Length: 88
Length: 465
Image (tube, rainbow over the protein chains, first blue to last red):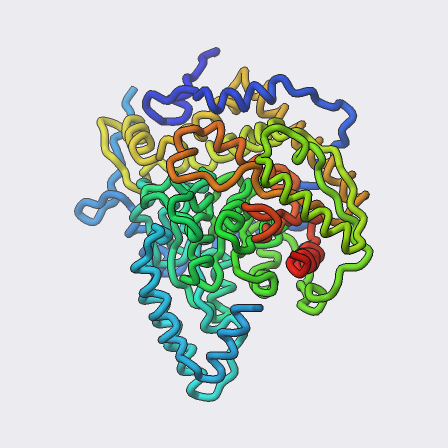
Protein backbone atom coordinates (compact mmCIF):
# COMPACT_ATOMS: atom_id res chain seq x y z
CA UNK A 1 0.00 0.00 0.00
CA UNK A 2 1.43 3.33 -0.98
CA UNK A 3 -0.43 6.37 0.15
CA UNK A 4 1.07 9.82 0.68
CA UNK A 5 -0.45 11.52 3.68
CA UNK A 6 -0.65 15.32 3.30
CA UNK A 7 0.96 17.47 5.99
CA UNK A 8 -2.36 18.88 7.25
CA UNK A 9 -3.58 15.35 8.04
CA UNK A 10 -0.21 14.37 9.53
CA UNK A 11 -0.31 17.45 11.76
CA UNK A 12 -4.07 17.39 12.47
CA UNK A 13 -4.16 21.07 11.55
CA UNK A 14 -6.70 22.34 9.04
CA UNK A 15 -5.22 23.93 5.93
CA UNK A 16 -1.65 23.35 7.13
CA UNK A 17 1.00 23.82 4.47
CA UNK A 18 4.75 24.26 4.39
CA UNK A 19 6.12 27.74 5.08
CA UNK A 20 8.74 29.63 3.10
CA UNK A 21 10.65 30.56 6.27
CA UNK A 22 10.98 26.92 7.32
CA UNK A 23 11.72 25.68 3.79
CA UNK A 24 14.71 28.05 3.69
CA UNK A 25 16.13 26.23 6.74
CA UNK A 26 15.58 22.83 5.15
CA UNK A 27 17.31 23.96 1.94
CA UNK A 28 20.46 24.68 3.95
CA UNK A 29 20.41 21.09 5.27
CA UNK A 30 19.74 19.60 1.84
CA UNK A 31 22.73 21.47 0.41
CA UNK A 32 25.07 20.86 3.35
CA UNK A 33 28.08 18.62 2.90
CA UNK A 34 28.52 15.81 5.38
CA UNK A 35 32.00 14.86 6.51
CA UNK A 36 31.99 11.08 6.09
CA UNK A 37 34.84 10.78 8.57
CA UNK A 38 33.02 12.35 11.49
CA UNK A 39 33.15 10.17 14.56
CA UNK A 40 30.10 8.21 15.58
CA UNK A 41 30.23 9.15 19.22
CA UNK A 42 26.53 9.85 19.39
CA UNK A 43 25.91 6.43 20.85
CA UNK A 44 27.26 8.02 24.06
CA UNK A 45 24.03 9.99 24.27
CA UNK A 46 21.97 6.84 24.65
CA UNK A 47 20.74 5.97 28.13
CA UNK A 48 22.54 2.98 29.66
CA UNK A 49 20.42 -0.09 30.40
CA UNK A 50 21.53 0.22 34.04
CA UNK A 51 19.92 3.66 34.17
CA UNK A 52 16.50 2.51 32.98
CA UNK A 53 13.97 2.67 35.74
CA UNK A 54 12.10 -0.41 36.90
CA UNK A 55 8.97 -1.14 34.92
CA UNK A 56 6.56 -0.96 37.82
CA UNK A 57 3.12 0.57 38.12
CA UNK A 58 2.94 3.30 40.76
CA UNK A 59 -0.40 4.34 42.13
CA UNK A 60 -1.06 8.09 41.83
CA UNK A 61 -2.08 10.09 44.86
CA UNK A 62 -5.77 10.93 45.37
CA UNK A 63 -5.14 14.60 44.57
CA UNK A 64 -3.39 13.68 41.30
CA UNK A 65 -6.32 11.46 40.28
CA UNK A 66 -8.80 14.21 41.19
CA UNK A 67 -6.94 16.83 39.10
CA UNK A 68 -6.72 14.45 36.11
CA UNK A 69 -10.52 14.05 36.23
CA UNK A 70 -10.96 17.84 36.67
CA UNK A 71 -8.89 18.42 33.54
CA UNK A 72 -11.08 16.16 31.41
CA UNK A 73 -12.85 18.41 28.91
CA UNK A 74 -16.38 17.00 29.06
CA UNK A 75 -18.48 15.18 31.63
CA UNK A 76 -22.12 14.03 31.52
CA UNK A 77 -24.04 12.26 34.29
CA UNK A 78 -20.81 11.26 36.00
CA UNK A 79 -19.22 9.88 32.81
CA UNK A 80 -16.26 11.35 30.94
CA UNK A 81 -17.36 11.93 27.36
CA UNK A 82 -15.17 11.45 24.29
CA UNK A 83 -15.96 12.47 20.71
CA UNK A 84 -17.76 10.15 18.33
CA UNK A 85 -15.23 7.79 16.75
CA UNK A 86 -15.09 7.82 12.92
CA UNK A 87 -17.24 5.17 11.36
CA UNK A 88 -16.08 3.06 8.43
CA UNK B 1 26.43 40.55 45.84
CA UNK B 2 24.08 37.66 46.44
CA UNK B 3 20.48 38.88 46.73
CA UNK B 4 19.56 35.50 48.25
CA UNK B 5 22.13 35.94 51.05
CA UNK B 6 21.09 39.56 51.66
CA UNK B 7 17.42 38.64 52.11
CA UNK B 8 18.37 35.59 54.19
CA UNK B 9 20.31 37.84 56.60
CA UNK B 10 17.46 40.37 56.71
CA UNK B 11 14.92 37.67 57.56
CA UNK B 12 17.12 36.28 60.35
CA UNK B 13 17.71 39.82 61.69
CA UNK B 14 13.92 40.36 61.57
CA UNK B 15 14.32 43.55 59.50
CA UNK B 16 11.01 42.54 57.88
CA UNK B 17 8.86 39.45 57.86
CA UNK B 18 8.74 36.96 55.03
CA UNK B 19 5.02 37.68 54.70
CA UNK B 20 5.70 41.41 54.25
CA UNK B 21 8.36 40.64 51.64
CA UNK B 22 6.02 38.30 49.75
CA UNK B 23 3.10 40.76 49.94
CA UNK B 24 5.28 43.51 48.49
CA UNK B 25 6.42 41.32 45.60
CA UNK B 26 2.89 39.99 44.96
CA UNK B 27 1.63 43.58 44.66
CA UNK B 28 4.36 44.34 42.12
CA UNK B 29 3.60 41.18 40.14
CA UNK B 30 -0.13 42.01 40.03
CA UNK B 31 0.34 45.66 39.01
CA UNK B 32 3.07 44.83 36.55
CA UNK B 33 3.31 46.76 33.28
CA UNK B 34 5.38 44.17 31.42
CA UNK B 35 2.84 41.32 30.85
CA UNK B 36 5.42 39.12 32.54
CA UNK B 37 2.97 36.96 34.50
CA UNK B 38 0.25 34.46 33.52
CA UNK B 39 -0.86 33.42 37.03
CA UNK B 40 0.02 34.94 40.40
CA UNK B 41 0.38 32.22 43.05
CA UNK B 42 -0.73 34.41 45.95
CA UNK B 43 -2.38 31.71 48.09
CA UNK B 44 0.56 29.31 47.79
CA UNK B 45 3.09 32.09 48.37
CA UNK B 46 1.43 33.53 51.46
CA UNK B 47 0.92 30.06 53.00
CA UNK B 48 4.60 29.29 52.51
CA UNK B 49 5.65 32.71 53.88
CA UNK B 50 3.59 32.18 57.03
CA UNK B 51 5.46 28.93 57.72
CA UNK B 52 8.83 30.67 57.34
CA UNK B 53 7.78 33.46 59.70
CA UNK B 54 6.60 30.91 62.27
CA UNK B 55 10.00 29.18 62.19
CA UNK B 56 11.84 32.47 62.64
CA UNK B 57 9.50 33.48 65.48
CA UNK B 58 10.18 30.13 67.18
CA UNK B 59 13.91 30.73 66.94
CA UNK B 60 14.41 27.85 64.49
CA UNK B 61 17.18 27.96 61.89
CA UNK B 62 16.14 28.62 58.31
CA UNK B 63 17.89 27.44 55.17
CA UNK B 64 19.44 29.82 52.65
CA UNK B 65 16.52 29.55 50.20
CA UNK B 66 13.81 29.55 52.86
CA UNK B 67 11.58 32.57 52.31
CA UNK B 68 13.18 33.58 49.00
CA UNK B 69 10.52 34.54 46.38
CA UNK B 70 10.98 32.94 42.95
CA UNK B 71 9.18 32.78 39.63
CA UNK B 72 8.39 29.78 37.44
CA UNK B 73 8.19 29.80 33.65
CA UNK B 74 4.70 28.68 32.71
CA UNK B 75 5.88 25.37 31.28
CA UNK B 76 6.58 23.74 34.66
CA UNK B 77 4.08 21.61 36.52
CA UNK B 78 3.26 22.77 40.04
CA UNK B 79 0.48 20.61 41.48
CA UNK B 80 -2.86 22.39 41.56
CA UNK B 81 -1.72 25.45 39.58
CA UNK B 82 -2.55 26.36 35.98
CA UNK B 83 0.21 25.42 33.53
CA UNK B 84 -0.73 26.98 30.22
CA UNK B 85 2.52 27.06 28.21
CA UNK B 86 1.10 30.49 27.23
CA UNK B 87 -1.35 28.71 24.91
CA UNK B 88 -5.12 28.71 24.43
CA UNK B 89 -5.10 24.91 24.37
CA UNK B 90 -3.88 24.64 27.98
CA UNK B 91 -5.10 27.98 29.32
CA UNK B 92 -7.18 26.24 32.01
CA UNK B 93 -5.04 23.10 32.42
CA UNK B 94 -4.21 22.30 36.03
CA UNK B 95 -0.97 20.48 36.89
CA UNK B 96 -1.59 17.10 38.47
CA UNK B 97 1.97 16.86 39.85
CA UNK B 98 5.05 19.02 40.48
CA UNK B 99 8.24 19.18 38.39
CA UNK B 100 11.34 17.78 40.12
CA UNK B 101 13.37 21.03 39.94
CA UNK B 102 10.47 23.04 41.36
CA UNK B 103 9.81 20.44 44.09
CA UNK B 104 13.46 20.69 45.19
CA UNK B 105 13.10 24.46 45.55
CA UNK B 106 9.83 24.10 47.46
CA UNK B 107 11.47 21.52 49.73
CA UNK B 108 14.27 24.05 50.36
CA UNK B 109 11.63 26.60 51.43
CA UNK B 110 11.73 28.96 48.44
CA UNK B 111 8.44 30.80 47.85
CA UNK B 112 6.67 30.23 44.48
CA UNK B 113 5.29 33.60 43.35
CA UNK B 114 4.04 33.33 39.77
CA UNK B 115 3.77 31.29 36.61
CA UNK B 116 5.59 33.45 34.09
CA UNK B 117 4.68 34.48 30.56
CA UNK B 118 6.76 33.00 27.75
CA UNK B 119 6.57 32.07 24.09
CA UNK B 120 3.91 29.43 23.64
CA UNK B 121 5.46 25.97 24.23
CA UNK B 122 8.85 27.72 24.10
CA UNK B 123 8.33 28.47 20.40
CA UNK B 124 9.90 31.88 19.98
CA UNK B 125 12.74 34.28 20.65
CA UNK B 126 10.83 37.36 21.77
CA UNK B 127 7.97 36.30 24.12
CA UNK B 128 5.50 37.74 21.63
CA UNK B 129 4.17 34.32 20.62
CA UNK B 130 1.89 34.14 23.67
CA UNK B 131 -1.86 34.38 24.22
CA UNK B 132 -1.25 36.51 27.34
CA UNK B 133 0.13 39.51 25.41
CA UNK B 134 3.72 40.34 24.41
CA UNK B 135 6.16 40.59 27.30
CA UNK B 136 7.88 43.99 27.45
CA UNK B 137 11.57 44.46 28.12
CA UNK B 138 12.44 45.46 31.71
CA UNK B 139 15.05 48.00 30.58
CA UNK B 140 13.06 49.62 27.74
CA UNK B 141 9.37 48.74 27.36
CA UNK B 142 9.37 49.50 23.63
CA UNK B 143 11.67 46.51 23.14
CA UNK B 144 10.94 42.77 23.29
CA UNK B 145 11.76 40.83 26.45
CA UNK B 146 13.46 38.08 24.47
CA UNK B 147 12.37 34.50 24.60
CA UNK B 148 11.18 32.13 25.23
CA UNK B 149 11.72 32.70 29.00
CA UNK B 150 10.93 36.43 28.61
CA UNK B 151 8.59 36.79 31.62
CA UNK B 152 11.14 35.05 33.85
CA UNK B 153 13.95 37.40 32.79
CA UNK B 154 11.80 40.51 33.20
CA UNK B 155 10.57 39.51 36.67
CA UNK B 156 14.14 39.10 37.90
CA UNK B 157 15.34 42.30 36.22
CA UNK B 158 12.41 44.28 37.68
CA UNK B 159 12.97 42.80 41.18
CA UNK B 160 9.54 41.15 41.15
CA UNK B 161 11.25 37.83 41.94
CA UNK B 162 14.69 37.18 43.39
CA UNK B 163 15.29 34.46 40.83
CA UNK B 164 13.26 32.57 38.26
CA UNK B 165 13.40 29.12 36.75
CA UNK B 166 13.40 29.27 32.97
CA UNK B 167 13.80 26.65 30.28
CA UNK B 168 16.41 26.72 27.50
CA UNK B 169 16.11 24.59 24.35
CA UNK B 170 17.97 26.78 21.84
CA UNK B 171 18.74 29.95 23.81
CA UNK B 172 15.53 30.59 25.75
CA UNK B 173 17.25 31.43 29.05
CA UNK B 174 20.42 33.00 27.68
CA UNK B 175 18.92 35.41 25.17
CA UNK B 176 16.22 36.98 27.41
CA UNK B 177 18.81 37.17 30.22
CA UNK B 178 21.03 39.21 27.89
CA UNK B 179 18.13 41.37 26.67
CA UNK B 180 17.17 42.25 30.27
CA UNK B 181 20.73 42.56 31.61
CA UNK B 182 20.78 39.72 34.15
CA UNK B 183 22.55 36.35 34.40
CA UNK B 184 21.01 33.20 32.92
CA UNK B 185 22.47 29.70 32.88
CA UNK B 186 21.72 26.89 30.46
CA UNK B 187 23.18 23.90 32.33
CA UNK B 188 24.73 20.80 30.80
CA UNK B 189 21.94 18.69 29.32
CA UNK B 190 20.66 16.35 32.03
CA UNK B 191 22.22 18.14 35.01
CA UNK B 192 18.74 19.27 36.07
CA UNK B 193 15.83 16.84 35.73
CA UNK B 194 13.32 17.65 32.99
CA UNK B 195 10.54 15.78 34.80
CA UNK B 196 7.51 18.07 34.86
CA UNK B 197 8.88 20.45 32.21
CA UNK B 198 6.53 20.60 29.24
CA UNK B 199 8.56 19.09 26.41
CA UNK B 200 9.54 21.19 23.40
CA UNK B 201 12.58 19.41 21.92
CA UNK B 202 13.54 16.67 24.33
CA UNK B 203 17.16 16.24 23.18
CA UNK B 204 18.07 19.87 23.98
CA UNK B 205 15.48 20.92 26.61
CA UNK B 206 17.17 22.11 29.81
CA UNK B 207 16.04 23.65 33.11
CA UNK B 208 18.03 26.59 34.48
CA UNK B 209 18.07 29.70 36.67
CA UNK B 210 17.94 33.43 35.92
CA UNK B 211 19.26 35.75 38.64
CA UNK B 212 21.12 39.00 39.26
CA UNK B 213 24.38 37.49 40.49
CA UNK B 214 26.71 34.60 39.70
CA UNK B 215 26.65 33.57 43.37
CA UNK B 216 22.86 33.21 43.26
CA UNK B 217 23.05 31.14 40.06
CA UNK B 218 25.42 28.75 41.89
CA UNK B 219 23.20 28.55 45.01
CA UNK B 220 20.16 27.64 42.90
CA UNK B 221 22.07 25.13 40.74
CA UNK B 222 23.30 23.30 43.83
CA UNK B 223 19.68 22.80 44.89
CA UNK B 224 18.06 21.83 41.59
CA UNK B 225 20.82 19.64 40.09
CA UNK B 226 20.97 15.88 40.41
CA UNK B 227 20.03 12.53 39.00
CA UNK B 228 16.32 11.82 39.03
CA UNK B 229 14.69 8.43 38.50
CA UNK B 230 11.83 10.21 36.77
CA UNK B 231 14.13 11.56 34.02
CA UNK B 232 16.39 8.84 32.68
CA UNK B 233 18.56 11.35 30.82
CA UNK B 234 19.45 13.13 34.08
CA UNK B 235 23.02 12.89 35.38
CA UNK B 236 24.89 13.15 38.65
CA UNK B 237 26.97 16.27 39.17
CA UNK B 238 29.31 17.81 41.68
CA UNK B 239 28.54 20.76 43.94
CA UNK B 240 29.58 24.18 42.66
CA UNK B 241 31.83 25.65 45.36
CA UNK B 242 31.45 29.35 46.23
CA UNK B 243 35.14 29.65 47.19
CA UNK B 244 36.22 28.41 43.75
CA UNK B 245 33.90 30.80 41.91
CA UNK B 246 35.26 33.79 43.81
CA UNK B 247 38.89 32.80 43.23
CA UNK B 248 41.01 33.92 40.27
CA UNK B 249 40.87 31.41 37.41
CA UNK B 250 44.34 30.06 36.73
CA UNK B 251 45.73 28.27 33.69
CA UNK B 252 42.53 28.85 31.73
CA UNK B 253 42.77 28.90 27.93
CA UNK B 254 40.12 30.97 26.17
CA UNK B 255 38.78 30.70 22.63
CA UNK B 256 36.22 32.39 20.42
CA UNK B 257 34.69 31.51 17.08
CA UNK B 258 36.28 33.75 14.47
CA UNK B 259 33.45 33.23 11.97
CA UNK B 260 30.84 34.41 14.51
CA UNK B 261 32.65 37.76 14.57
CA UNK B 262 34.06 38.08 11.05
CA UNK B 263 30.81 38.16 9.07
CA UNK B 264 28.33 40.65 7.66
CA UNK B 265 25.40 39.60 9.89
CA UNK B 266 26.85 40.85 13.17
CA UNK B 267 25.98 44.37 14.32
CA UNK B 268 29.16 46.54 14.21
CA UNK B 269 28.71 47.75 17.79
CA UNK B 270 28.24 44.23 19.14
CA UNK B 271 31.33 43.14 17.22
CA UNK B 272 33.43 46.04 18.53
CA UNK B 273 32.24 45.55 22.11
CA UNK B 274 32.90 41.81 21.98
CA UNK B 275 36.42 42.31 20.64
CA UNK B 276 37.04 44.92 23.36
CA UNK B 277 36.12 42.27 25.95
CA UNK B 278 38.54 39.84 24.30
CA UNK B 279 41.28 42.48 24.65
CA UNK B 280 40.51 42.79 28.37
CA UNK B 281 40.87 39.03 28.74
CA UNK B 282 44.22 39.13 26.93
CA UNK B 283 45.34 42.10 29.03
CA UNK B 284 44.67 40.05 32.16
CA UNK B 285 47.24 37.52 30.90
CA UNK B 286 45.02 34.81 29.44
CA UNK B 287 45.80 33.11 26.15
CA UNK B 288 43.01 33.68 23.64
CA UNK B 289 42.72 31.48 20.58
CA UNK B 290 40.64 32.04 17.45
CA UNK B 291 38.63 28.92 16.55
CA UNK B 292 36.94 27.83 13.34
CA UNK B 293 33.37 26.66 13.60
CA UNK B 294 30.24 25.92 11.59
CA UNK B 295 28.58 28.88 9.91
CA UNK B 296 25.47 30.35 11.51
CA UNK B 297 23.15 29.15 8.72
CA UNK B 298 24.15 25.52 9.28
CA UNK B 299 23.81 25.78 13.06
CA UNK B 300 20.40 27.44 12.91
CA UNK B 301 19.08 25.07 10.23
CA UNK B 302 20.34 21.95 12.03
CA UNK B 303 18.86 23.07 15.32
CA UNK B 304 15.46 24.03 13.90
CA UNK B 305 15.18 20.88 11.78
CA UNK B 306 15.69 18.66 14.82
CA UNK B 307 13.72 20.86 17.23
CA UNK B 308 10.73 21.02 14.88
CA UNK B 309 10.77 17.24 14.42
CA UNK B 310 10.86 16.73 18.17
CA UNK B 311 8.15 19.28 18.91
CA UNK B 312 5.85 17.81 16.24
CA UNK B 313 6.19 14.50 18.05
CA UNK B 314 5.90 15.93 21.59
CA UNK B 315 2.86 18.08 20.82
CA UNK B 316 0.99 15.33 18.94
CA UNK B 317 -0.56 14.31 22.29
CA UNK B 318 -2.32 17.68 22.57
CA UNK B 319 -5.62 16.92 20.87
CA UNK B 320 -8.24 17.79 23.49
CA UNK B 321 -9.15 14.18 24.24
CA UNK B 322 -8.06 13.87 27.87
CA UNK B 323 -7.29 17.51 28.71
CA UNK B 324 -7.07 20.92 27.07
CA UNK B 325 -9.63 23.11 25.39
CA UNK B 326 -11.47 20.53 23.26
CA UNK B 327 -13.59 21.98 20.45
CA UNK B 328 -16.22 19.41 19.46
CA UNK B 329 -16.91 18.66 15.82
CA UNK B 330 -18.76 15.97 13.88
CA UNK B 331 -16.36 13.12 14.77
CA UNK B 332 -13.10 12.35 16.56
CA UNK B 333 -10.86 13.18 13.61
CA UNK B 334 -12.55 16.52 12.98
CA UNK B 335 -12.48 17.28 16.70
CA UNK B 336 -8.71 16.77 16.71
CA UNK B 337 -8.31 19.00 13.66
CA UNK B 338 -10.44 21.88 14.92
CA UNK B 339 -9.06 21.71 18.46
CA UNK B 340 -5.47 21.92 17.25
CA UNK B 341 -6.12 24.44 14.46
CA UNK B 342 -7.87 26.92 16.71
CA UNK B 343 -5.84 26.48 19.90
CA UNK B 344 -2.26 26.60 18.62
CA UNK B 345 -0.61 29.90 17.64
CA UNK B 346 0.65 30.47 14.09
CA UNK B 347 4.29 29.95 15.14
CA UNK B 348 3.50 26.71 16.96
CA UNK B 349 1.60 25.42 13.93
CA UNK B 350 4.50 26.43 11.66
CA UNK B 351 6.90 24.34 13.78
CA UNK B 352 4.58 21.32 14.03
CA UNK B 353 4.03 21.32 10.27
CA UNK B 354 7.77 21.74 9.61
CA UNK B 355 8.51 18.86 11.97
CA UNK B 356 6.00 16.56 10.32
CA UNK B 357 7.41 17.51 6.91
CA UNK B 358 10.94 16.43 7.82
CA UNK B 359 9.77 13.24 9.50
CA UNK B 360 7.65 12.12 6.58
CA UNK B 361 8.63 9.62 3.90
CA UNK B 362 10.70 11.20 1.15
CA UNK B 363 11.98 14.01 3.39
CA UNK B 364 13.44 12.22 6.39
CA UNK B 365 16.61 11.01 4.60
CA UNK B 366 17.35 14.31 2.89
CA UNK B 367 16.61 16.55 5.83
CA UNK B 368 15.99 14.95 9.26
CA UNK B 369 18.65 12.22 9.12
CA UNK B 370 21.10 14.61 7.49
CA UNK B 371 20.38 17.06 10.31
CA UNK B 372 21.26 14.30 12.78
CA UNK B 373 24.54 13.69 10.93
CA UNK B 374 25.35 17.40 11.08
CA UNK B 375 24.64 17.40 14.80
CA UNK B 376 27.19 14.61 15.26
CA UNK B 377 29.75 16.71 13.39
CA UNK B 378 28.96 19.73 15.54
CA UNK B 379 29.38 17.65 18.73
CA UNK B 380 32.67 16.27 17.43
CA UNK B 381 33.90 19.79 16.63
CA UNK B 382 33.06 20.93 20.17
CA UNK B 383 35.03 18.00 21.60
CA UNK B 384 38.04 19.01 19.51
CA UNK B 385 37.70 22.67 20.56
CA UNK B 386 37.55 21.79 24.25
CA UNK B 387 40.77 19.85 23.85
CA UNK B 388 42.37 23.18 22.88
CA UNK B 389 40.62 25.62 25.22
CA UNK B 390 38.70 25.60 28.53
CA UNK B 391 36.32 28.47 27.86
CA UNK B 392 34.63 29.71 24.69
CA UNK B 393 33.35 33.29 24.66
CA UNK B 394 30.69 34.50 22.23
CA UNK B 395 28.13 37.27 21.88
CA UNK B 396 24.58 36.20 22.80
CA UNK B 397 23.02 37.55 19.61
CA UNK B 398 24.31 38.99 16.34
CA UNK B 399 22.00 42.02 16.60
CA UNK B 400 20.65 44.46 19.17
CA UNK B 401 17.36 43.94 21.07
CA UNK B 402 14.47 44.26 18.55
CA UNK B 403 11.48 46.51 19.02
CA UNK B 404 8.14 44.87 19.84
CA UNK B 405 6.48 43.77 16.59
CA UNK B 406 9.70 43.70 14.56
CA UNK B 407 10.39 39.96 14.46
CA UNK B 408 7.08 38.20 15.10
CA UNK B 409 6.02 38.50 11.48
CA UNK B 410 9.43 37.63 10.10
CA UNK B 411 10.02 34.08 11.34
CA UNK B 412 13.16 33.47 9.28
CA UNK B 413 14.81 36.55 10.78
CA UNK B 414 13.75 35.32 14.22
CA UNK B 415 15.34 31.91 13.61
CA UNK B 416 18.59 33.53 12.45
CA UNK B 417 18.72 35.69 15.59
CA UNK B 418 19.42 32.45 17.50
CA UNK B 419 22.64 31.92 15.54
CA UNK B 420 24.99 32.14 18.54
CA UNK B 421 22.93 30.18 21.07
CA UNK B 422 21.66 27.08 19.23
CA UNK B 423 25.09 25.48 18.63
CA UNK B 424 25.76 25.11 22.36
CA UNK B 425 22.31 23.53 22.74
CA UNK B 426 23.12 20.94 20.06
CA UNK B 427 26.38 20.26 21.91
CA UNK B 428 24.49 19.97 25.24
CA UNK B 429 27.09 22.33 26.77
CA UNK B 430 26.75 24.54 29.85
CA UNK B 431 26.59 28.22 28.89
CA UNK B 432 26.11 31.32 31.02
CA UNK B 433 24.90 34.67 29.74
CA UNK B 434 26.54 37.60 31.53
CA UNK B 435 24.86 41.02 31.40
CA UNK B 436 27.89 42.87 30.01
CA UNK B 437 30.41 42.69 27.17
CA UNK B 438 27.90 43.61 24.44
CA UNK B 439 24.45 45.23 24.38
CA UNK B 440 22.85 41.78 24.61
CA UNK B 441 25.51 40.27 26.87
CA UNK B 442 28.24 37.71 26.46
CA UNK B 443 28.11 33.90 26.63
CA UNK B 444 30.65 31.87 28.59
CA UNK B 445 30.68 28.21 27.55
CA UNK B 446 32.59 25.23 28.93
CA UNK B 447 32.80 21.51 28.24
CA UNK B 448 30.05 19.29 29.66
CA UNK B 449 29.73 19.49 33.48
CA UNK B 450 32.11 22.46 33.72
CA UNK B 451 29.54 24.79 35.29
CA UNK B 452 31.93 25.68 38.12
CA UNK B 453 34.64 26.73 35.65
CA UNK B 454 32.32 28.94 33.59
CA UNK B 455 30.90 30.64 36.69
CA UNK B 456 34.44 31.23 37.99
CA UNK B 457 35.52 32.75 34.67
CA UNK B 458 32.34 34.84 34.46
CA UNK B 459 33.12 36.21 37.91
CA UNK B 460 36.56 37.25 36.67
CA UNK B 461 35.00 38.88 33.57
CA UNK B 462 32.59 40.80 35.78
CA UNK B 463 35.53 42.18 37.77
CA UNK B 464 37.40 43.44 34.69
CA UNK B 465 34.40 45.23 33.14
